[in-house]
Length: 488
Image (cartoon, rainbow, N blue to C red):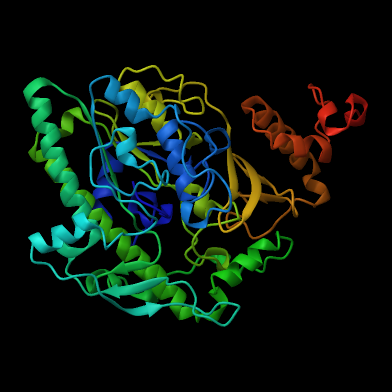
């Protein structure tokens, strides 16, 4: 698992310049999902959804600790999680790398073996990492060539990238892969001795910004070869004003366009560094004789803007750049080289883990096993997907419905959005108010309303009063209305 990873950085997803041979091979020998979405484009709630198999509105861990403005910071006691279910069935369960699915309750609390690595980005002061550097005689973390814009208040912008003065072997990514291999060796020995099955997660902190990488990755791609995203022409006309504010927050317009090209080039280099480290783990699987008996998943918590829509990071804009992510699954014995176009979610990994382990999946209530799809079957599957957002630097509620052609985003505090992804794949033109889109707009609004009510997501209360979605079908008296207020 990576963090803040754009789908278009991988060769398997069509990037002809990408250097990602390991993940491309995983796609060639497994199943690539072309419509794999995150439930929400923020680290902690997305990771908590993977942990629980529940949508964010249900598990209620809605924001990153570092930017939390009053939400829960840990899952409640007694919450179902997949590692605890696996351990109850005799599994070894390990997690090497980024946790970020709670504040006081760490990975070990839920039964994961591995060093405690909290936080949002490479914790280069972590005692286990420092011990690794000392053990191998490697130099400490040091950076230069920092890339920043200028904030609206005149101060220096957030760090976006920097040159790392360490060899590859000293990078946090190499360290994580090394620790993962060590744990894989331990788990393989247990498996050989008494058949103990295992789950091992390797969660990189990158390619989340800031992109801090050694020379060979900082300069690996020529910025002149970078094709800027078409949505860099974003004007925010007809869009929620928060998007322009967020662009200012990330200081996009204070940097020359050449800097944007360089940032994308560094980001691709970061992806290559991570691909190489995944390759080391895959080689260890081969060496240990695990490849033919072990399912392998690759995905991330969400995507990243990297200049798209004149934005960086992620935030209150439900564009494909941060909601559609890579998703590759290889299960032994399943057909190789499949490409599936069903709408699936990071959430669905949870039920898939349980399915592969022969464990009841009902506690992962918003998750559906991907095993039938990876096995080449064609079960009935939803023709659309719902995503949600609850804020990052500030609270803001959004819900999204995405189907084969269109995307609807409901923004209670602002204008709604509707995109025709066939005609406008870069989501530059909000067609929500166009008269000829009325039928599409109304049918999608009704569909989203019905799905939210079915799930128990009370965001639908706003939609009940504001849009023509029919009778309420429930007692609305607590809001001061009666049934008659909602009839046509």
